[in-house]
Image 1 (spheres, rainbow, N blue to C red):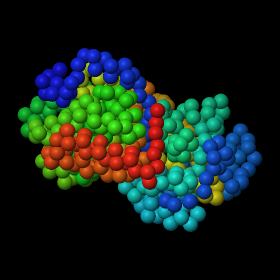
Image 2: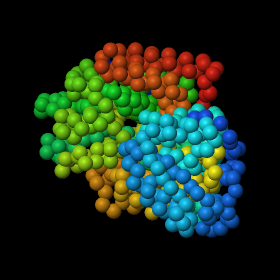
Image 3: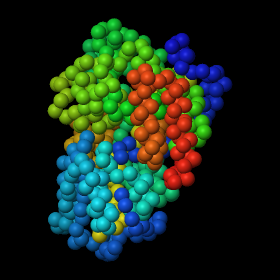
Image 4: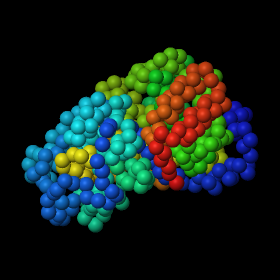
Length: 479
């Protein structure tokens, strides 16, 4: 371990590394990576206002003649896949009963309808204008999706839907033990680079922070900025810091942060991760002007060759469709480990089931909504989704059905396979909007040099403690 990395880890001894390794063998518990007004059913109850006969083809007992309304967030994944999925539902129903609209203004468009008791059946509740899921749950606006989990898959009557979902998908979509939200897309965070550039320069992706700093030195000496990120949407860098801290400290880091523990942010792993982020700023590795760039601007600068590495999620290729230079060959790698003694292995990734789909509790055809989700999880639907978006659906073995994947999609599939059970994410930003605001604000201070790593951790701990002490805020927990 180099001196630069050693200085990130105050108080780390062989004993603490061994203790961390024992505590963090395999963290599973993925959270929704994307992200309002009153009704409800108890866990396990049928979520329909009436239906049809249950058959092998119709295990949920849907009235196939009933209208079904789907609203898709037209963001990084576009909306064409929604049109395809609606077509599959109509083919199953035997008529043109399902319709779809798309928008980037989910909350603005749908909150009045929830308030009026007339929500759509299926909503892709994502984007900057997404409705706060925790608020919808608290006001009993979301249908219980448990019957979907217990239904057979569309492809194999002997396999239940719950058995094809990624590890942690049910946990991350559950509130107070009731499954309310289906994360449809496998999303992962990592460091992206041009495979062509790295090959031409003879650079190798770094697996540890030690290696990463050495790589940054090489890149900088070539005249290229080593790193770029979106300084406007600093939750990207927050996620990277949380990833490194979790890989270093193991499962206790996730539990501490999500469960609002007094040391959730005040610990050696989180401090070391914050110091690593601070190093990028202090050593001049970040492209000048990044603090004022939004996500698409920073991604465009990366594609133009102004910087070598960018942190982003697996939607990157599709989001930049039409702007990727020929022969760029974008590739993602797991976020580097802080040390060779991290609790979790290098292939561990922050990811899981993102792009949250919900069914309106007061919608007229709730069982049809559940059936639509069942069809979405079938092989025909997931294959079409990958083809159209360059992303994987959040089901096991999704990468095995790819025919001619791009370098980006193949690298995501390879990363998912290599991670195995070592896939994790944090839920606090979804559960507590004030903490999400704090993470953006404090990371902006850290990445611009306005605060130190110590100040970052202290500020985040203070924000967490305030949420924990506020009796007006409904609390959630994980174990």
